[in-house]
Amino acid sequence: MEENEIKNKFKDLEAKYYEQEHRLFPIWFNFFTKSKFSKNDKRRVGINKAVIWSLIPKPTVTFVAISGLSLLTLFLAYEANVKLENQNTLLLVQNELQESQRRASLNIEISSIMQQINIEREKSNLKSLKDSQHKKKGHKVAPYTLSDITAARIASISRSLRPYRILKTDRVDLNSFSVTDFWDEEKRISSTKRLKTSDFLETEIRSPEREQLMTALATMRISFSNIGRNSNFDFCRFNDFDFSKGDLRTIRMSNSSLNHCNLSYTIFDYGILKGTNFNSIYGTSLSFIGSELNNSNFSYASINNTSFENANLTNVNFSNANLIQCDFSGATIDSADFTNANLSGINYENLPNLSRVKSLNNTLIENIQNCPDSVLKKLVKMGAVTSWDEHNEKKTQHNIELS
Image (cartoon, rainbow, N blue to C red):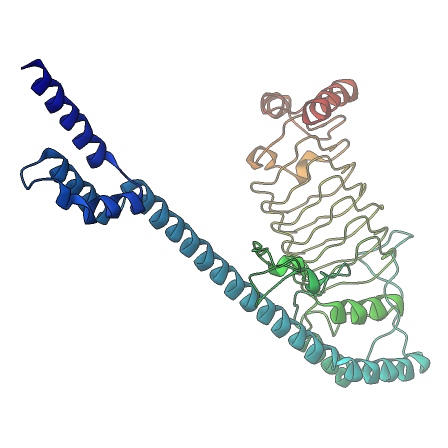
């Protein structure tokens, strides 16, 4: 009796062994030799189960295979999209450069205009240097006035020279970017770098041709009296240029940049200079009478004794600017920012709406003239200071906090 139990247990153990077999060759070997067991033998049943399980794919292997294939598909799709975007980027750069070449071809017309200016200038068609609005010794009205025909040609060409994004001097090595291949030089799958137009072109648009024309006119002391309003010198860059004693009245030069320029005694009367960057300009006795300067930036400018009479200074940034004894008579200063600015010696009667500005935080109003005590107290409550020591101390603390 015990012997039969042992045999049955051995058969059960052997059946489980056959059922758990996972190697392909032993499974089929057992299957083809199972005839040695009777039909009702547990071992035969275990062999059949092993065969059935061998025909069903293992869940782990299937999951790994499907996941790997999905990841590979996503990677290839991402690479294809990046390469397509890179091709579109290169096409945009190419179109921009073609447009710049078209505009640069107008240099022939500019050369012709320069020759005509020289001819008219040699005739010395001088205007009177007297000017009732600019009696200061340093102001000099431009002596050369062009004919109406030449002025019209300048206005026409300046409007044709529209701004564009120019190519950077530090050009990108195109050999380092693959647009058509998924493989690197060592035949390994490589991830494609995404190209941007900023890799090739400057971020801001500008017109170098307008800059060339404008520089020539200013240097040759040509009057803008019959050029300014009809011409267009928007989006120009004149950083670190010397415009001192220039006569640029009525000029249209919005969204331009004159950073760090010397503008002593320069005349911008009745000009359109919206959104122009005058950051860190310096000089004395500038004239912006009646000019449109809204949204411009005069931060860190040092332009003492400058006239902003009847100018539009809405939303202008005068932060950290030295504006000692400047004239703001009739100017619109709504939302102007005078944070850390120096307004020493100004005449309050010429700037009665100082309380309508955006900020007077640490604005120095030392020796302010014709300002009632009640108004002075109100300005102090808005953040203005009346002594240089206090102004300098707060400004130093502000710079420390920024650093």
